[in-house]
Structures are given as C-alpha cells and as structure tokens.
Image 1 (spheres, helix red, strand yellow):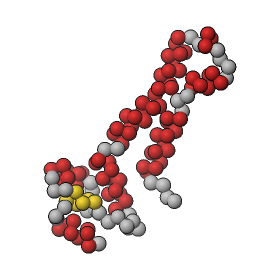
Image 2 (cartoon, helix red, strand yellow):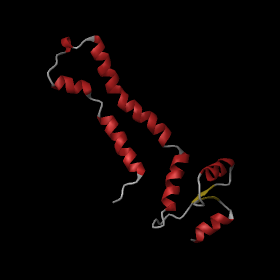
Image 3 (tube, helix red, strand yellow):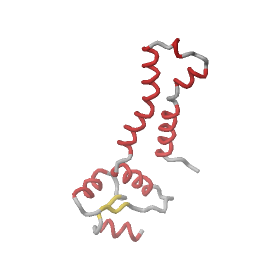
Length: 120
C-alpha cells in the first residue's frame, strides 16, 4: 500500500486529537485537585480543548468540494490509475473548478476534452 497525502494528513489530524488528554495524565500521576491552581486548570482546559478544535477547523477547510475534486484530479494524473478524468457539470461553478486545476484531467461535461477522456 502506498499512502497518499490525504492519508498522511488524516494521521496528523488523528495525532492532534489524541494529544489532548493532559488533565488525565496529571490525574494519573497523582496530582490532587487541591494542588492545581486556577491558572493551571485553565491551561489544562485550553490544552485539552485545542487539538479537537484544530482538527475541526482543519476539517472544515480540507473537506471542501474543490479539494475533493483536486484529490481525484491528482489520482487521474497518475498513469497507473484506473481513474482517467474528472468531468464537471457545465455550470459556472464547474467551469471555475476546471480552470483552477492545471492540466487536462478535469474537464467540462459535453466538451471535446470530456469525450476524449471518456474514450481513454
């Protein structure tokens, strides 16, 4: 198996979400609650909440339709891949995605490039 960039990014997101349980670590080390100051408690709460929030925001930007099309477009550029092209609808949004990606693997439906891609 050859991992792609999306799989590596998924691993990084997972590691960020796993890194948050600092409060549980302190409890397991035997630090009683009366020895934790308000400032320390606030830092623990922020550090515990930060990784899931980072992954949430990251996910909102990483999982857009344009990003998904770009991923499939990258797969289509691989000559060993069975995916040969991404065909977008002939709308303003579809044309914008086609124009945003370099090369000729993402094309507009009904175009000569789409017909050629379908025959490949």
